[in-house]
Length: 486
Image (cartoon, rainbow, N blue to C red; front, side, top):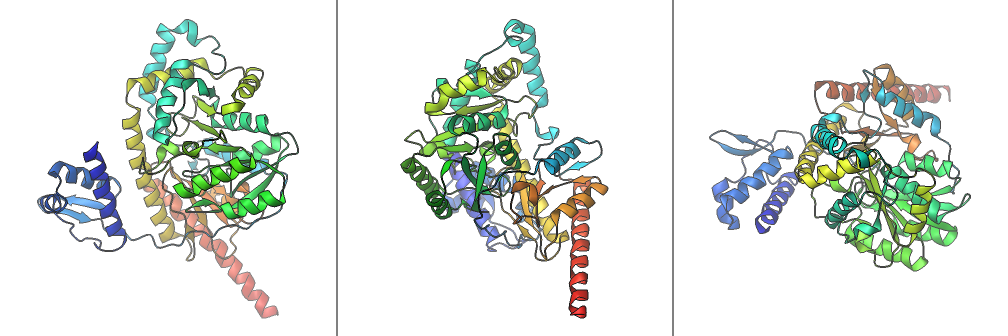
């Protein structure tokens, strides 16, 4: 355990030194022997740290020469600005969202729109093996209902995994759901009524925005910083002004901006909402994909007053198709079980049993380590490509986990128009307009980086950059004509 912590500390320190320019691209870093002596650790610990930096794309080994800083340009593009508070609103954006989801499944389209991981990154073979065993040896139960709260062995495995999020829960406190969306829906239905107002992040996950529409809820968007997450100050002002019934947010690797709220602000948020008696519905679907596990916790970890209703799923890590999620709802659990029983009855029995068997088999943590490395490299490649190919002035987020990238385009470029032009080149993106009812994010877009980075992907990003530059040129030309007429 100690050596594991040591290699992570050494890797983080060297990564910070590289990013700060202490070691320049192409420059050699200290040898394994030298750093081992400096730090008073074993050669194996240093080698493990260097392997971590290689996985992050920061250094490269040269045979007989040592380790050198990788010759890649630095990410210098600024991050997008924070949004402003606007009036509460009713929701209408379903048409374009349906189009994004449809295009993500169309043959030949490069799916940079919907946040769906490539099947290349999913443990499909291992999952298939477990599913075959379940249906062969436990068919009677697998093909029957497993009513709410769900399959006990799966709930036990999830309770174990919640320790990594900093939360100690009993398997009896967990309800298995049809993915994270059903978990959030059940939470919203248990604490709100049609016409009520909820608060969420700005921008916010488009699935939540549409879910509120289906439930007849109004939404107030709270400005969200791309690095530190939702503004607590703005939330407090909004709660004083409007009758907010609940807050829905993602505290770790948020969607779409990838923000992660620091621990001190997480504690303050939970305490603030507990004092007001308002529930927090936490969507932690990207929580297990944090690039540096152990450095961040879920909001649920700081919940001492049964304020946080925790939702997540295995859609981003094991398979979106198995539709296996869960909710930890505290005092609302009985109501949620009742809602589920008389709507969807239960989550799929085969999926529950197969996922439980896969988790029990012991390869999930190894799989997560692989995912984190791959998504971190992918994000870096996308960021640098956007910086290189997109118009000057483009702003890019720096997620600490997950596989989605939020981009702010300069000069009033309409991302909806870019979406339409990109489809003509068989590229799907998610324009910023679908993440808010306001017009604040019409110049923004979200990219799915959960696809392999290869020549085809790079060409797609290059094409997007060319299209964006073309739209900007037209805007500038129209402005020039306007000035001449004036």
